[in-house]
Amino acid sequence: MPEAGYIMGQRVENLREWAEVLVNSDQFAANSVKDYWKVMIGHDPQGYENVEYEALWKKFRTEHSYSVKALLHDLIKTEAYSVP
Image (cartoon, one colour):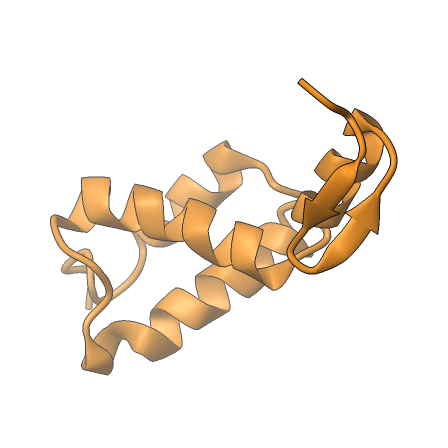
């Protein structure tokens, strides 16, 4: 597998750079949270749930520092999970 290439339109020279580009992207955080959302809630975020979903993936990337445990604690507290 070649180490150099492009990911998300950005040139990378090695595997460490591949990982850094991904981890520093909103798309990675949003997709990671969407995977857990689908497992826990049973469907992709719906229009009326987008505010909670967006807040979760932004928090996952920043405040949670990619901690799945912290993400899941916040996910089960959402209205989408049926907690008023």
